[in-house]
Length: 402
Image (cartoon, rainbow, N blue to C red; front, side):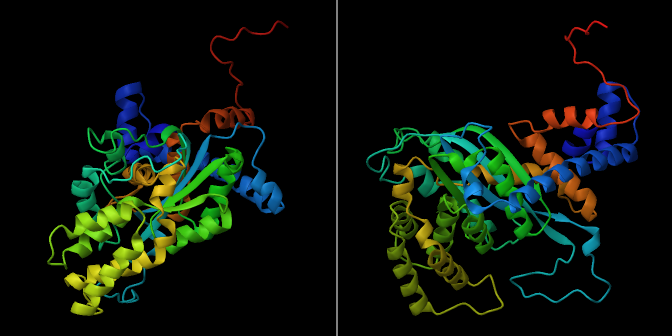
């Protein structure tokens, strides 16, 4: 019941699945109640872990947990999805007017999603791939991200398509370059504030002993919230701005330049970490054509303005040759994929959640997406704490003699 209610698109679909697969008639209402009950128990465990973390001295927080082996490369990624909440509906006539760049959407709220990736990779003496692969210059994934950049409700690129370009580069200059290999992925999701989510992400990372990893990275897009969480909760991790977002800003802004192969030149500069030169080119374009009007997103100059802001804010997180040398990831494909998987359950124009139920489903959906299978030990704890129920033995275990 909990699996179906947390992973299928709706409780009604969960009801139908259980009927077809288990030949059990269980109402959607009962499934929803069970999901909420179990989800609240998992949230209580999450909150206890956060409370314990908040009482620790800083040196203890940075040491990690000795109960688990540290990954070779610990990678934290963070992004946001979208879902609708009933408790955020504004009263009639109270919705605040928004600009053309920020359309009115009082009921849509952001879900925070984090990935904790255990990876392996080699460290090189030099940049193992100094020339950008052709797939990154002409990839449809880059154009897809760029086309969605003005849509604040965007979920990112098609699932894993952007990040897998490196792994499928073919016979080009990146054929011998091996990006970090994923060993396991854990997912954290919440509808609470970014301040609360930062603690949740750090608490789970500490349980996985991420602070003890010899190499670590924090990969995200250019949102200020992401970098604040990195500074406050993962200062030991190398901050890396997602390459695909950087290329998408360059691709959009390049349409303003009448020169040939402008995007290809900028893409190579970004790949090589020469972001300052890209900024100079953008500043020249802005001086020639001026800035876009404040209330429009259709003016081509708008993309130049946005690119200048993005590269100006994130240039210090874009030393991609050094990240490749250290064997660190340079794209956020894994978090983009995880956000999409979370959204499959909670996002929809017909889906409206209350605060408590949505938080329970976000927690359980993230648990089921985690390779460490955190629900397996939880179920043992949960059943042991139940009253008025039988304690069943695991299949295959011999009963103890009286």
